[in-house]
View 1 (cartoon, rainbow, N blue to C red):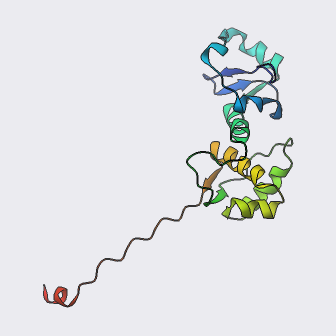
View 2 (tube, rainbow, N blue to C red):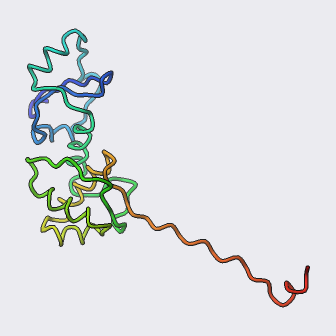
Length: 164
């Protein structure tokens, strides 16, 4: 890809080799990458490539940025925009995305609708949705779905009282 820096994926170690900043990787979020676009790397070259490209980073950071930029302000498939979302733990917030700190602060207070998070954080609904997608992708957020209550067992009517 011409508009994004080169990265090297190392599935054996669960890391990617590349720069420390994430914004330059956003073009990968919407790119169609085919197997023919990939080039094998000799494992003995990985240490030198890590130095050359800017370090070794966990796949979770890559998953986070890809989910952040991959849905263009729409909630990822399988999630309901009318559900309330909550953070399970304080996420690593990236300095490149200063509004995410405010979004995370609102979400840590308790489950909230996407629109409520946007209103309380001062971020746009699209920014909140993208942040929620990224947080869901790396397992630091989840929808707060209230399980339907079990129906009460049928009470015996007049005839039920006589059957014993």
